[in-house]
Length: 399
View 1 (tube, rainbow, N blue to C red):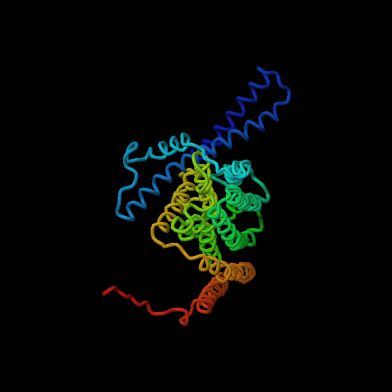
View 2: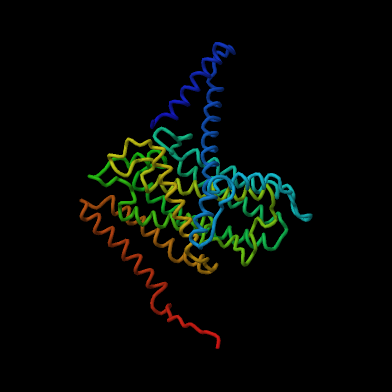
């Protein structure tokens, strides 16, 4: 079962090679087979994550409804789980309205420039054992290089709309993305230092095995736990999720950089945000949570891709829980938190990884690295948000 999908792809390629050699008469079908292999991998990835996108939109609305003591979608299909199909049909049939003063070509290309790079970065995510579409030696670099291309699409959308709300939303989004990309990448560099490779497959293989019942995941080390927390916070901001959803603050700038988009173009922006969320959650699983490895040795019989998607759903449910719980930050709080707090702590975490590598024995490693992580957090928190910054809250009521 673990290699069912891999063996199915191999069988399809063997059948295609036999057909090309004996029926079509091609002496060298290798280029055609390489293209066919690419198409099969792309179709499987897009199909799986597109279905996940539809289901997660319904699950999120139902869970937020439960948190806020109201009904979520419950009309279309069993328990409302066909709601995403109705939403898809609605966006396909809605009118595409483009402002008269807009730069029409750039306005048209912006959602495409957002979705295409986000789909490409799935090619380096190890979804299961032997299930990575593109096993690059610099897969992590490929992931972050394409992920940063979304900033260009956000600027294209905001600038081409010729709308002040759109432009303000785009500037907010770009400032936020650039600010939180730095701690995001620095958190990943800690894993690269520990593993010694930029390959996502090698990073997952480095977390193979167990120490008793405890898996050898990076998150179960002092630097790995700190790096995972920093990565998770930065990923929340990169995905424009609450409490970092300032670029589309409805109460301030309506819908942010895609206010002038409607119909299917708006749906592409919506799709892009969720695809980005799935991709960055998948990278967090790859870097810190053991990738497709089982959490306990006796559960290794379950297919590896099932573990990957189980961890992915836990990450997504955590994002939904945070969205229904925390209020939105102010812009100055968001920027200050990134540059004054996250960036220094991620730099200290790099020092912690180096010490973990060179210190002798587990006692010294755990003691020194844990102390450095805790003391740096407490010291920086007291320096920035100490007692002199806190005041007693006073409630005033009207007479």
